[in-house]
Image 1 (tube, rainbow, N blue to C red):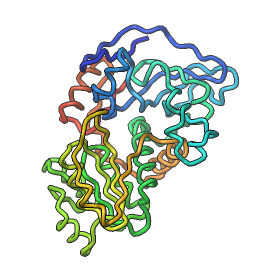
Image 2: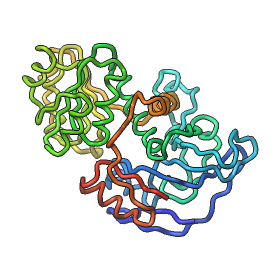
Image 3: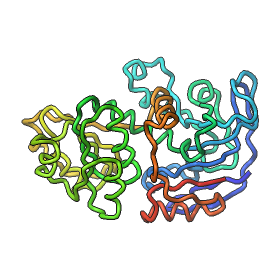
Image 4: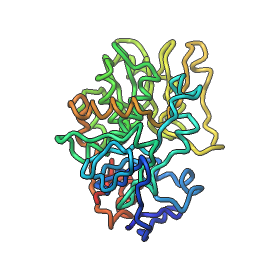
Length: 334
């Protein structure tokens, strides 16, 4: 089979790999499509793993079934790349994405391969048949939406929330669409790029060009935000977002920065308002199930999120489009 191998420093090649075989409890899928995630583009994050086959948003058809695996050849499935143990202290506290098992489990060799072996742990806990009416494209959005769903639940987005999203990239737009589904009353999106603002407005959000507390107060009838979700690693925006948070609110950092990179933030701006700062990482099995259901029943439509489809043999072009920002979201089609 062929797989897209990342060698570090932004370099990708399509190389030959041995065809995988399903062991007991495992399945092998023939990949149909796989999204490119922002983390796939982070050289500081991926270079330490290179050479590696990237991709963790795959949809495919089951072509092999190991003994005991609850699928049949021909099933079209979404595959989650990590699964927790559900038994450790972190899992019992609802922080299953921090579980050691979650960090260890991994699809083989990665989503950007013609065939993927799915370990038995993943098969048992977080592989899902896709509804007949769900497109492959929608299937590739299950994992990104699940990550956002987990984050918004952690931040307490709910009935009557006033939510600010900083950044209208693909994840920021999904954040803006999901918040009202969870009960948010009003959503403000901060986006300096004028070309990206119409998509946020189409979701019913108030769109402002900068982290302006007065603009937020105007949108929220004199109040600041209950939740501020920062979908950018721009240092200035990460600090400016603090000024949009109201008393007893949450500022959640969704986009990571490299370890050791210092981000100056004005803690004095939030101390007297008891603002909580938090981060969120990935998604657990419950988030995946709920995200799939939301895409299936139309509560989240995710229209316009995927702007480019690129064939597998042009995967390097797909990464270029994503890296330069010419594409909002790229899906690689097999």
